[in-house]
Length: 264
Image (cartoon, rainbow, N blue to C red):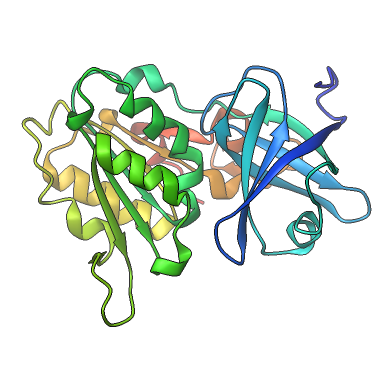
């Protein structure tokens, strides 16, 4: 149940906790309402504060929030278990319009926890008429840092998936290297008509977009998420402001024609 007052959080029960790594868990939260990939919720715990968390999965009566243990609030969240409740506000932001990527060639480039907000986009691509025209490059720091392993296997069966890690121990048989290294060799028929989604650390997004442009993509066919700038969700605190844009209100998903002019 959501609250009509956007400032007041509502309790949401934890339906399931899925461990990915020692620092990253997915909390499946009870929620019934409209939500899109790329949107986010504010998760709060009294006396500890709140944190903006991107939606990583959407179900009939739940949303998945994949949380990295990095601070006071998230540390406390990790002490909660199935049956416990968290306080939530949202969803906030514009999210991804998955209908834009149903037809034609599409490339998704995601790094690390940036996979979370595009997980729903990639799932949607698997259900399109020509999933082999959908190319997904996913990168993690190491094999131990991989998220959504079951999804990765499923995506690999249906899409053109490139899974890479920045570094790996000796004997690792998978691909290694930055996600940007795989952009030049993508087997696209017409890059000028293809569409792309890029989410990840700012430096990764910068060079991934640069690689796509060099490949022949048009700026207006590239979308990025500025999810790392999300803050209060309402644009009131001002911390999400980049130039004249408020990431919480105008984003976090932006077409690159807008995003390229957003200087933090």
